[in-house]
Image (cartoon, rainbow, N blue to C red; front, side, top):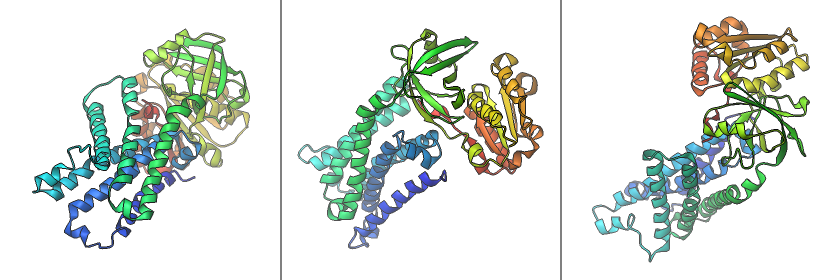
Length: 432
């Protein structure tokens, strides 16, 4: 599915919302005679719709994943719709205040709570919670677990906003199609919030595994798991979320790329120690139960869809992990599709998978493998990659590594004439 399908859907929803607003007007001249009133109404409607969409997009749904071309991209859409929706919702009463001025008494009713009027009160509750969350998010450095707990108060915003929209005397109450549209999205958002709060924590780790082995090499853990029940089906290049009861738990977890190939019958993860949380993996031992949620990710999808097109894989550090299973797939299937794999590390001591990759690469004449050491050769660049793989302009380019590396290489390739549609990467920064 086209990766822009999700964004097309979002813009379509906004377009329909604005048009339903216009259709609700029996006299469109009011749009010009009372412009701030109209702006307040439109920002309120679009704001609540975008906030509703942000809740729906937070569902880790395979369908939504497919619409946007990856979980990271659907979460980017979740953050953007939530952010824009919040901004519009805050502006919503401000335009009413501007329309009411210089009548101060009339203007105050849009910013001062009135407990005698439930319609206005619920709107003020939603607005107050939003403002508090904005201040805490932008101006207070909070630990992630506290920020996450506060983030859950967005559910209260949706409940209050939905009640406000249902009770207030407005176009929503007078025009049935608009009422169905707004309350329908508000209801869907509330159901999504309830699902993520109460049902998802029970269902999210459906695959139960047992630690077969765990080894630490430098600043990395290599963990292998065997299934205790149903085996998780996955494709090379995908990732999953792990939880070890009492040892390695953190809300919805952190994504880790799957190193193993589906034919191996085990799950293998390469995890870089990047803080106290991942360091707790040293407490995990053989035989421990591990819950796995997934799989997710579409990084390697171009490899399977366009089998006649060359593939250039560029990994930075721990970003090599999703390409190990893909390389094994390439070798085992005896594919003649040209595949170039570039493994960029700061020093040779960090290239923990070098020997394994080299032995696999020697098994196929279609594979070109290159280890790039930045201390000796400088940062990996699009120019250097082009020298290693001259067919890069006809290839699908798969990037995995630090965000700065992926964005930098993407921009360099595009300046050299490579189409953006040929450059693929997943950004794990969407978690936390």
